[in-house]
Every structure is written in C-alpha cells, then in structure tokens.
Length: 192
View 1 (tube, rainbow, N blue to C red):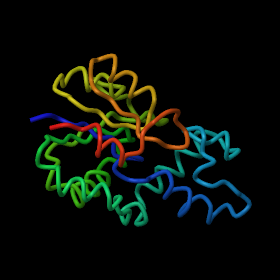
View 2 (view 1 turned 180 degrees about the vertical axis):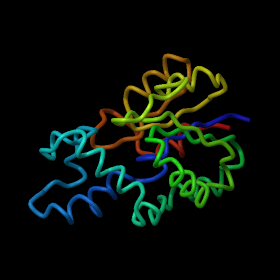
View 3 (view 1 turned 60 degrees about the vertical axis):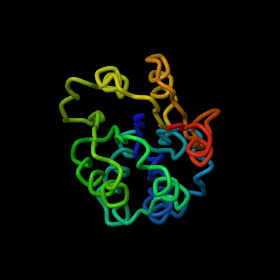
C-alpha cells in the first residue's frame, strides 16, 4: 500500500483564504487585497505589516472558532470516500506547538477515517524552542523513508521531497509557481 503525506494548511484546508477573509479583512477595512493577490507567503510585505504581526494574527486565527469551523473541499472529500482506503495517509504540518492540537482535532473530524498518523515540525516563533530533531519537513521525510507521494503548497518543501526521490506535488496557490490544482493531483497523479 502506497503512502501519501499531506500538508494540512492550504492543502487539506484553505487556511490562508479563511484567515484573510474572516480575520484580516474584517478588522482592516482599508485593505483591498483579495486572496488571489497574495503572491507571497508569508504575505506580510504585501499587507504592509511585519512578519511578526502577520504570524501573530495567523496563529490567533488557527486557535479561533472560525478555523475550527473550516470545511474541506467537497471534491477532496469525494476523492477520499472513493479512494482513501487504497492508500496509507500521514498528515505533516509546520505549525507552532500551541496551534497543533486544534489542527489534529480538525483533521480527525474530517479525515479520521483515513489518517492514523499526524506529525508536525514546530514552526519557529519568538520565545519557543526550535524543533527537535527536525526543523524542516525534509528532515521528517528523510527519517520516515516510506513516502511515495508528498503534497504541499510550499516550493521549498516540494523540491526537498523531490531530492529525496519522492513523487512530490505542489498544490497551486497564488504564492507559488507552477503547481497543479489539488483536484488535478488527486485525479491524475496518485496511483495505488
């Protein structure tokens, strides 16, 4: 059985879109950005704020009732219903420790039938200890050594996985170049 490692934020869910539309824009009415305008991630420069301000806002959203209420894409849920049992699934996210528990809860609520493994690489935040032993997703992938497919929206993570010999797919988002839509990846690239 082949193993798929899935990023959570902006792959299994649409965190950045939800953060922008439900958290940032309502509290910053002068901001005219649309999700499609976020051509950088993190988007702090585009928003005219510091990286620290952006991360604090995003992390607060990750802990909010609105983040808890996010619903996965219907097409993705249909794919899991039809194909999920044909693969082994692992979630791998990069988040600050204080926001990991809500991500586990969210993922198990929607994808618990298919995922038995949840892993995270601690995202660097001021005042928090770095991750041990892995500080990047590539370190975890290398250690695991059992990944057939890797899906992420971050170009560096996808390239690092490819260097490890993993079939890695970049999920298209406004901030990355040359990704495939999630629908296209699950329909055409993931073979049991």
